[in-house]
Image (cartoon, rainbow, N blue to C red; front, side):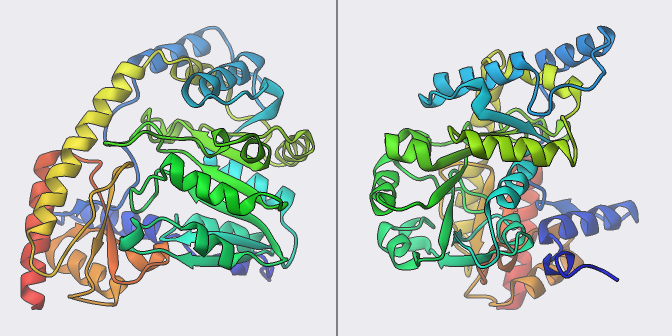
Length: 388
């Protein structure tokens, strides 16, 4: 009864673990969940006030599919101010989170047999959306030596006549790695003279530690023309449930195609979120964002120290986002079984590394208070000691 296309999709391990943890907690069990990719901070009041005003003003009707004009202007302003990127409002489309932006893009661009280069560890959704578009994910395995970042030599070796696209994620979910300007320049040099599109997922750009964020499209005019910039407000502005993502590209044909697809699927995103997003994009809550960033940075430093003191575990300090990608290879090479046993015996929920294309790791979200983080790592240490 089901289509062949839908059967190519695998369930999200991150959502599955988070759901199981919630179910166990609802049953009265003592559960500490470090599985969700969601800030534990509330949406800034300025944004909520703008949403309330929109409701009271009766701004509750359909809007243009890509977004209202003042919103698209605000996105363009943000990209110029923060990233030195010159996009016109007509180069931008707003969707129900960056996940829909990616879905629209892949459906509009990819054909059967096209290859998409994806460095691993990767966000769980990338290969699934590529497969749903009948294309082929080409996984490039990175490691701790390179800071979990794809090198120019690896990119060059992965390119074939069928390569249509390469996905870059900086900062990374799940590793927290961030590409430097020099690293992006080396990747850009490999792509010069090709027709390969770059998809740059920059969702965590505001959450970086001890490194400057550099947008892929800002590297050169060549990169600007080939890059589709994908971003949103879910992570940096604690607006996960508002569902706000956007995509920017100077390719007018591509924007028109995605507008056409979105018009026949979801149409515009909800009108209230559109109004609420404007102050965030214009920099009016930057002070709140910085408070969150500093809190995440402090948690990361302590969590890294605590994990690296556990015999059998190790972790690199993240350069961004709010995740640790913890190496458990000295304990187990079956991350699903490890995480399942950990949850059942200690009540600690983390996500198996295999879901991100890297066996022998788990992802630990430090988007929760430091007391909970300390207790969670204490339980993990006790569990690891029982395995040795």
